[in-house]
Image 1 (tube, rainbow, N blue to C red):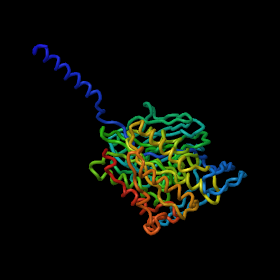
Image 2 (cartoon, rainbow, N blue to C red):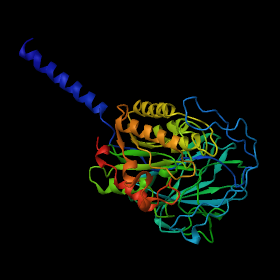
Image 3 (cartoon, helix red, strand yellow):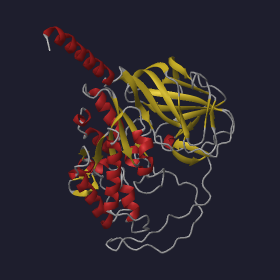
Image 4 (cartoon, rainbow, N blue to C red):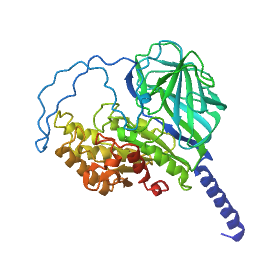
Length: 458
């Protein structure tokens, strides 16, 4: 090839290479989750009248758990017991009576604490567990000013395909159009929406918000403050909030049970371990663009439905489908162990191998979508109501697998962080809520502080 021909050919190759790189480059900005909650099915203000007892399954021959009774008789469900109070709680933290939705036109104002911020937001509403179409008549977002008050300057109306209202079919969710709202990182966002009078037999909601929300009669979604509102302690019909952020930004999902959900954390203080992790990520320049989404559900299990679908059943919806997700931290299995080896009533018996198979399924599904997977060791539970020597053996087996597995991208040692050095199978007293299963605020903070932030720079 002559020099005269070689130069144009090389120029053409250079142009094609540049074009290929530009097509492969990520967009200048994209949607990333900054807050989320795991929805589940709930009755609309009415306690269940009858429940079938969990199926009784005999433990395997190799199990040390006692054999359960052969049968159990379904019994009427008593009204929900009063929640065990946080040692730092006050009388005002007593849960209000369940609110019945759809009986009249009602404005719902839910307060959520976001992790990262951005110049645009969109909100995801859910009817995934509803059995009737769900109509939202109007919706609005604003930076919260405390209580039911909002900042009218930092606010915007929401639309859905350009319309101010939307009807969500049963089993579906709906994402709002983008709204121009400068949302600061680590701020409280008020999501207000009108729920017109309509039949609602079953809710899609996250039942324990550890955050006060509000309802008020009529359409007052844009009001600066609600007049004599009713308090709620759940996140009904609200699934997530996304922000528009630069391409380097990503989301981290904290996936688990009540210890991730933040059971017994002090109300309205964002004291869960994912909250503490979000604060630390924001303060570190290398990780300041990582949003944290808390997808914990109290009582959740890996292999069986209980409060909410099993972890395997909800993994795609609550982890993989999140906007911009790049990392997941999994802390789950203590409820599987507790119920399977409870010396008072054993049911849904599972082995350590069964649970490890569940772990591997979650890791495989996350990896297939390019999500890095970090498992957390199970925190101590000796002394809890459903603890047993056989269950403790399974817990230790799972923790050993987590620490040594080559099928995950790393682990977080929550057991080491929270255990009492004098009694390693029990919570450190300073971190123990009092039931020997859940942390209190200091324990949640220690858990969030123990996580290596370098895991989220890879």
